[in-house]
Image (cartoon, rainbow, N blue to C red; front, side):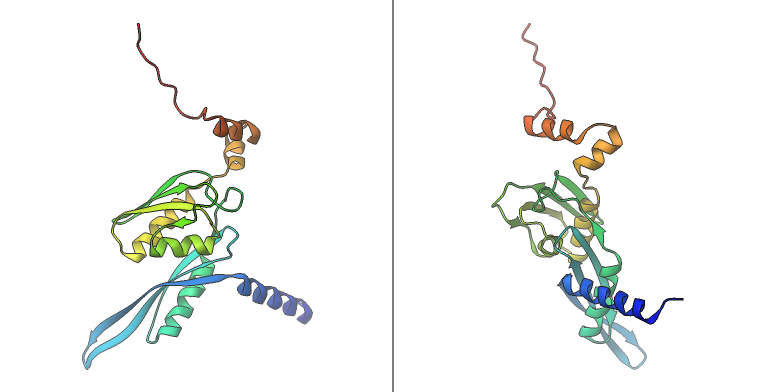
Length: 193
C-alpha cells in the first residue's frame, strides 16, 4: 500500500507534466442528433497535445458543451501520445508519407531557417511536437480529422539512425556518413559502349 507522502509526490509530478504540455484546438464541429422532441445539439472537438520535445498525441471528444468536449479530447490526446525521433531537435530525420482514408500527406525534412511550411491541422501537430523546420503537403481531402490521422501515421513511420543501426547491426557513424556523402542515392549506370 502506498504511503500518503508518496501519493502527494506522484500527484505533483503529474501536475508538472500537465503544465509542460501544449495543446492546440484544431477543429470544433456542431453535431445534431434528431430525437422525438426535435434536435439535440452537441459539439465534437479535435485537439492535439504535445510537449514540444518530441512527443505528440491527438484526441477527439464529444459533449453537450464546448469546454467539456475540449476537456474530453485533451484527456484522450494525453493517453495516445507517441514519441517521434527528431534530428537536432528541430526537424525530421527523413521524408515520409502517411495516409488515412482519403487524406494523404507528404512530410519533408528541411534545413535550418525554413520554418513550418504546412497547413492548419498539420501545423498544429508540428507545433505541439516541437519541430521548427519542415515542409509538408496535404494531398487529397482537407478534412481535419483525416489530415491529423495521416500526419500521425507519417510521424509513426519516422526512424532515427540509432534505431536503423541497431536493426541492421551497424554503427550509427556509418549510416550518418553515408547520408552526408550522398552515397545513399542509387548509382546511375550508363551504356556508353
